[in-house]
Image 1 (cartoon, helix red, strand yellow):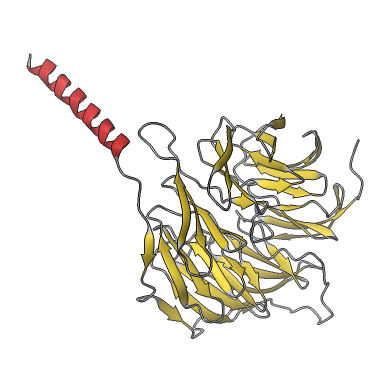
Image 2: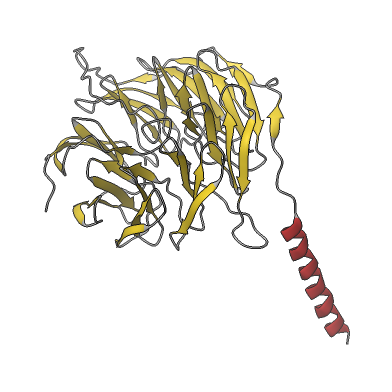
Length: 414
């Protein structure tokens, strides 16, 4: 009888706990004080120049610049108007002696990349030679953002730093006190990023001083997207939210549950075509929302664990998952247009360049598929996370620990 009573009591406690979880209130965010933040401006750790600096020459002015994770503040991860064709001859390759989880940025003839164990490196885009490198306060699983003469770097050590692009010298460093995995984005002189404690920051790019901070009360690993006068973000507490860019006032917020008792968790950043937001929870549930109102337009699912931010091009949404599937959905209504499976798991985002969509697997293979039907037309035996970026002249692929510049063939296989 005693054993039966104990079992009944445990069962009842489980039911009560489940009910409490189902009824728990959604986290309520708010603007918080911008004081009590430490900003350093004295450079105590100089950047390390390359052993033999290259001979000065006019930099290669490739366009378009790729200034932030996703290419633009909307994080669409695409250059549909750039038609390089299949990656062809390797122009140069640089072993970075560390993995690159997130892709680089480039502008003005230079490439900037963060290395996982905590270092930012600047390279010459024409030759791949290292121009300077600088250690960070912790792991740097993010993409550095280009903001005019400045480079903004976030780190798991809790610091967000502005470096001089020319030589890596420190301009300012904000200490948040918590890990920052979010890749920063800069628009109109303001730096936006999220922190692991749920705070979304807006900083003055010149000084590092906070203009506003909004606490969403849910871990932020995603990178905020700036869409018109809104900045939008996803969280591990199941939230998709947009705030007013100028003052941080909440515009709208939606919470999503994975089941009766648990909220969704979003690692993927929100990407946008200017009218709609597209994102995917780790469960694989895809959410598409109206930017202005937060109204859900359509929902779908990859059917597998999903971490990569969607890429957008020509009215299509491209999403890869940990089952090895890459799918294209119609942006207007979510209709699945095609689905392609490759061996291996895909953790990172997809990248669209012209009529090709690229992705890498954790089994260290990088693929190129046709946008129109998903047919695999290119494969390279390296890579692991995000495939890379592209300009009008070449691809720059961050293939795990190898940074490679490929010229394009300007022809795709039929």
